Length: 361
Image (cartoon, rainbow, N blue to C red; front, side, top):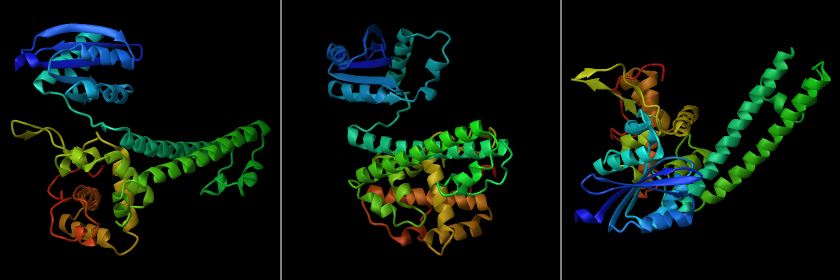
């Protein structure tokens, strides 16, 4: 029944939330604002008497928490990608009340691009564990670059390799620095580096402990090039294979999809890889490809066969990266064990040899 459907939207802020409401006919019924709290969110949603309540808000720092609070009191929660909502972020006039009205309109028209969030905290916790491990790893990379850069700035040029970071060889490099103050600055950076390494190891242990409840991770690790860390990260970010309707959406999420724009049958620019998605998953598949090339295995043979077909190292490499992602996705979705034959069958999964991709990808 028309009177039993309410299209609701929220504009989320730390201090205040604005709730907008629209009926089935597209008539906007107004806004109400309240202080941000779990109790106030529940009260506002319970005050809406329609039987079906569709609630939308944009992705942000509060989105996951608000979704968890709201789900028991609405029919469906939609977390939208703000980058896709041009009606809102490109509007000439912007405030909470205007934005909620526009979001209600997009919700009613089915024009919102959904961002997946798990319905329980277990998967979200596992993902944040993997993200923290990656953050500490990236901090180490930045610190190491800073240490080498500082040495070279003060004339110590030969700092190649990893020896400059080790406890055993640090003094040798520090003694070459003429100024005591600079040596003290470098020692502080070493202290931060050591702490970050300890925190990364702690984060890795936590990630692995949480990963024990996901048996598919052991199957991922059987794939050449996919190590323990890669298997955990893939699982943590994908969260569930059932969130994607087809394999091309998985590729896009892994930054391996291709953008192909056209108008009236004519191409608009070159095809290129889509930059939306999770760069860590693209990097994971690249590292797996690189590692697999070091020995004779099914991944390397798939790459060689693709290279013979495409005559392009870039296309063959991308085909192999997609195939790695596809095999992991397929055995997870079907609940199967990994078999090397999955890389060697006649399936077209992962084959993009007919797609024109620039050599700069």
